[in-house]
Image (cartoon, rainbow, N blue to C red):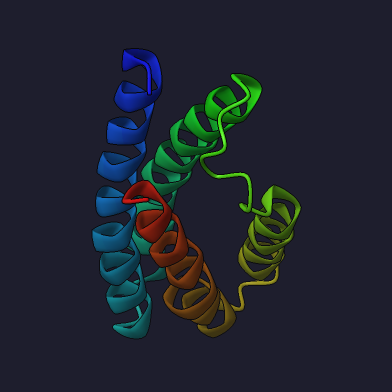
Length: 115
C-alpha cells in the first residue's frame, strides 16, 4: 500500500475517533435540553464529516479496495434526515440519528481501517 493511502487511512481513523466522541457529546447536550449548544457543536461535527468523506473519496478515486463497501448514498440520506430534524426542531430524532445510525456507520468505517 502506498504512503498516500496509508496517510489517508490514518486521517480517516483520526476523524472517526473525533466524530465518535463528538457524537456522544452532542447527544448528551441534546438530552440535557441545551439545543443551542448542540447546534453549535453540530457545525464542527459536520465540518469533520466533510473531511472524512473527502478522504474516503480520495481513496476510492485511487482505485484502492479500501472503503469500497462504504455506502455514501446511505450516509447522505442520514445527513439529510439530520438536517430535516434540525429544521423541524425535532431534537430527539436528531439525537437518535447521531447516537444510533451515525455511530453505527462510524464503527463500520473504523473496522475497515484495520483491514
